[in-house]
View: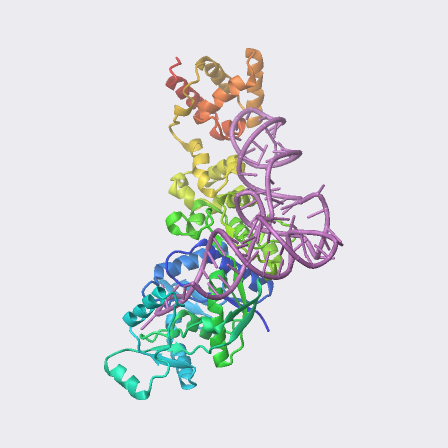
Length: 489
RNA sequence: GCCCCCAUGGACUAACGGUUAGGUCACCACUCUUUCAAGGUGGCAGUGGCGGUUCGAUUCCGCCUGGGGGCACCA
């Protein structure tokens, strides 16, 4: 049977790193098995689900280059408006659009006496929980509505109570499954209380919707976060109640914050899209995320995406949680950046260049400037800072004001003026010649020249920079610098 | 309170029960260089604790400790 896996986020809040990795592992697994990767939106939380969040999920997956075979897509119509549509034979792919399925299957369980109507109010349940906490008893529904007579039900309904459907958890049962990453895991059904599968509003709860959808969508492998381990026995019970085939389960370890606690926005955990915005390449992010919880036998670090697809396997996924480390992400970003041409980097950073106002300059110039600073780019967001001074009308000299020998620069200016072939090599030859003549160490000349041209103590290769700026600009900047530091022209 | 999962340097990880416990990031030093990066070389640093099984445990078992997840008409 061919592999079908799904990524099923709930569209509440932003798209975070943990979800991104879950999506990635599902996708890698599907690709590795030449199977299908499905995106399903679990929006049964009517209160917290937002369209904004759906967009961030879709954009996040797009950023990573993860394409889904079935699921929702954002499509632009003729008027240019965006619409969210579904594509695939197992749709719809939004749980809110699948309500009929859930109520139909809940009815089936009701008929088979594997579920029952429960009329308890929120307040009654809350009270029950409080009492259980006080008495230090296991928390959970006590089954008081399990055996209601027809008459009692009528009465409660007459009081205006809207019932929910609860699943009847069989008692004294050992539930065991083989987790593809952890091996055998088992639970005792006595620890699981009768849980709600259909709310009073008729919408399904997570565990129920998830099982119904995974079954209907013929999902073969459920790959999700470790936080779902304790949901698994409940879901298995539902599969068994319907005599449905149970898929494989694989639970991925959590991703933790630097202090070993849960990643949370409050503590500065960033959404995936923020990393894109900062200029982390998708190649680097995918590579890094893949390494966060998975590895090859030889601990290989650098991967291109196709290689990842080829080598990925759930059996080599780790069981222990990992901490997200931006250092290594940055390092990988540098490694992947090295593989890209200046042309490609230009394309990918265009948005950032535009935001910095640099898009007013000719593309050729920008590409050359990027070429000049290419090996210093750590993330695309660095580019405007790295190349901005090359285009500036005014140089800010405050970093280099301590220089006190303008006469060197004034002489040097004359040298530059007389270079007819203003190319890096020739400029270097002439400047070195000048150093020799004046009996100056190269450093005494090179540094001031850099300061005059850039206002900084660091930057690209000096003579390449001169060439890029051109003779006129070089001379103008030298004059300006001399003026600023108080020398005479 | 109950249930479940996890445990190798600061971080990510590797190691059929036999390795001087390996690699990568970070850090430190040196080196290359006109600067800053990048690069090169070297270094610091680890099997949570206690028992057991075994000729031999990072590896298998138990307990402890620590961390995490769950016990909702959230997902």
